[in-house]
Amino acid sequence: MRKAIALTAILLGSTALLSGCDKVKQVVTGKAEIANSAYPEKVYWGDTHLHTSNSPDAFGFGTRLDPEAALRFARGEEVTSSTGQKAKLARPLDFLVISDHSDGFATVKNLYEAPRAMITEPTLLRWYDLLHSGPEGSMKATAELIDAKAKGTLPPEIMDAKAAEARLKKDWLSHIAAVERYDEPGKFTAFVGFEYTLMDEGRNLHRNVVFRDSGNKAATVLPLTSFGTVVPDGLWDYMDAYAAKTGGKMLAIPHNSNMSNGRMFMMTDPSGGPMSAEYARRRLAHEPVVEITQIKGDSEAHPFMSPNDEFAGYGTAGWEIGDLMMVERTTPEMQPGSYVREALKRGLLIEQRTGANPYAFGVIGSTDSHTSLATGDEDNYFGKHSGVEPNSKRATEAQNLGTRSGRFGWNYLASGYAAVWATSNSREALFDAMMRKEVYGTTGPRMTLRVFGGWDFKAEDLKGDWVKAGYTRGVPMGGNLKAGKGVPSFIISALKDPIGANLDRVQVVKGWVDKNGVAQEKVFDVVWSDMAKRVAAGGKVPAVGDTVDLTKPSYQNSIGAPDLSTVWSDPEFDPAVRAFYYVRVLEIPTPTWVAYDAVRFKLTLDPKIPLKHQERGYTSPIWYNPAA
Image 1 (spheres, helix red, strand yellow):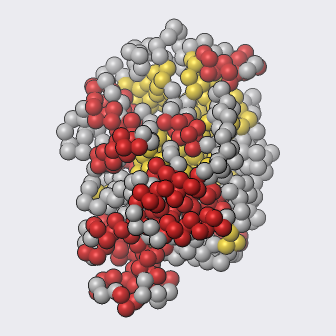
Image 2: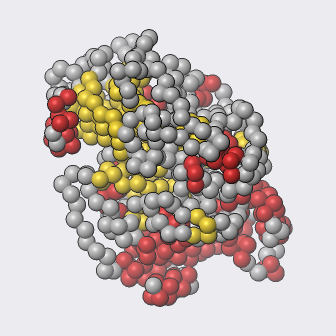
Image 3: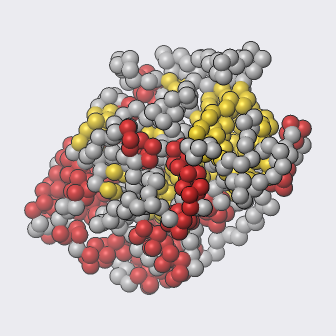
């Protein structure tokens, strides 16, 4: 560890990118080689979206934990949070991507730590004094900075390209050194990454960028900033240039489409013209996975587009009213371009016209925590940022993004996590699994979900080695099912979180384009707990029940099932119609993080605030194309 500390000092003092690269290379020397299994035998849990004190908004809102603390916490160690509270995961994670904002990477921390006498620009001096005036002033300065970034009015000292590059180089190499120290193949994977904070005014178009490679390659480039851009093409150019220069690989993960006001999943290209097949293919090649759920709301589906889905709209309260910065109110016609299920349907429509599908992506969950603490657990919720770490007011206070409010603490979710079916716990295996979309997302519980699609699966397959059968006779989640004989069948297995709630039901969500060229959807209940008593009527399965005791709070696993599995065939299959199928699994009702706060702090809350919910998991789809 002393060598690593010394190396960090060298990197911090480095002014040449390539010499810094050589130093990072020394950090990675001697890592163990690990064997990959023939096919994925284990699911690995992680967070691809975590911010530390290097993110300007996180630091401004009070986070003082650095990347090393974030990595230690994710590995299962106890740390002290920025507000002085002890924090520890009940179970460690398997991997982590620290995705600090490339725009302003470490700038607020550097401003805070700078000698005041060296600051002459009036706005920077004002922000410096606010940052040092206490939590309220610090949050005010950060809100003003976020607004200035969105409006393109940041002080010229921040925007000066040469000075910004020098600062970024130093801080980026220091960050890489920390990540390399904690990457331990076979035990814990630490990815190099950053967040590309793309914004069209207040419309969220952010992407998290993940490197497959170790630090020596990642250090040959700097994180790409989004200043002056409103479309993702520049990010894809950056990724292509990196691959051409180093032979390395990156992927990008769009997130919070729910606050894009329809811009994340458009039917057109960014100019408003028809989307071409080339553009569609390029997008999917760079963005194979989408973040479907996180602290700032769930982006699976909305009742406005899915009125027949009784479970649509989970975690949408407060988020469907406007864009990320509350600059523009959301109108109904914007909604379809903001939710994942609609994007999947739009992808089929675009593919029908062009032959290419830009939205044939897999799905994951992640936290987007700005506390350095990657926790998606309801009873261990540390909030979006350090200003809302556990305290008696955080559930009911208005939460400002920039200088505008409109959301409250209870609108935020304790969500989510990324689950990856990989052949080993290593950068290469996890990254490759994301590229092939053999991944799923949950709102926090670590339930084990698996689905295979094929043409000859039968119920008897579940009595044998059904995983092997799934790989040899079909395709896993994220796969493309080629045309075959008969009706497609799906092996589906769901196991509860080992220390969590029982399962209510398993559903298959199907989307397709009908013969009139109209996108359609339907949700099928395919297996559920206590099926003998909970008989479906009118196409609906009765509610599972409710054991939540809000006085504790607690729940009982006296209802639901620890595991649910089935082989399901599509009863409405038309071999001439392209379609997708994904699995949604619901838990029995459990308390929300607000319910735990209510007991902990003895709160009396407005009845409209939800204190219980049904947490869930979403698998990546399987696609059927009759022309394939």
